[in-house]
Length: 257
Image (cartoon, rainbow, N blue to C red; front, side, top):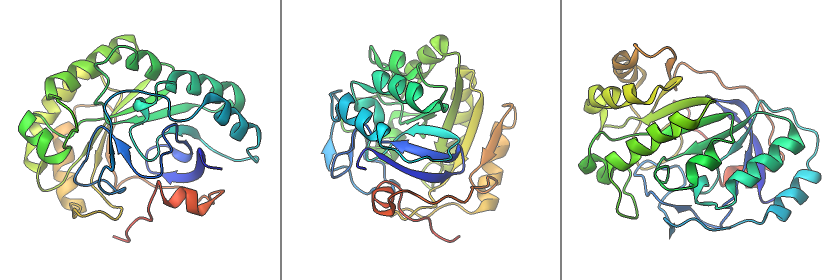
């Protein structure tokens, strides 16, 4: 299978069966984050288009072996909201698998018409926010098009206003933004988020992760939120992926830290 991969052990979603509606050979994204496990963005995209047909998705779903999963997660080799048919793909996966749907997004396109409507079809949306100002946004996330923090935060707020499901905000902390936790907490207050995920890169990448003590100190800035936890606190279930090669290219093996 080339579209569906996993399941993978997710510290946020348990046993996660991935669907990649971008599925390009190399990374296709609207960001080129310094910490990305997939390396540099090869295909720099900011316009939505169809990468994978819905018929191709249906065929793989129809040939899917029986799998135990907690979530179907739209993620993969790039930003899933770049797929113009994301909303329809979510509905097809829901009708076929009858498993809760999650989407992991970098939040870069949430201010655009149609993106919020597509994301609102999911049960859980994990939205990224790593920077409280434009300078840091361009240092850490390196968007491939003109984008501001104001656009990102307005997009998340607009999405929350139409979304009845679970909204989680994920923040990836590295040395570059570790001192900005108070400012990021202030922005998150405006989202009415159900959960805050305090992360640091534990998979192979050019950036060193923060240690558990540092992440615990950062977490204290977010304790006012009803559900907040760090990557070091979470447990991951044991899973066996259907195709290790297809899974590995989207989820490189974690470091032993």
